[in-house]
Image 1 (tube, rainbow, N blue to C red):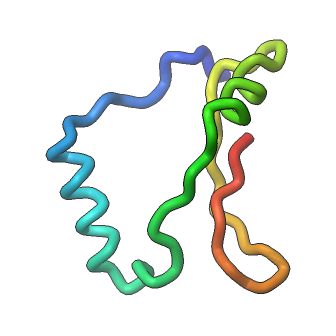
Image 2: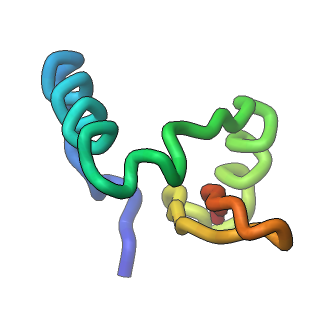
Length: 70
């Protein structure tokens, strides 16, 4: 059961290295990033019993990869 304190902070340098590693991988062409505005994030987080966000990779009807936030 999730409690809301899951995950870990990383430094900016770690984030840069992780994203660089991803861009260099064979799947890098698939998806680089997505942006989700704070209003949508706040709407999800304000739901009763919500303790965090879960991110899934998905594909839309055109076959493009995307990120699904729940």
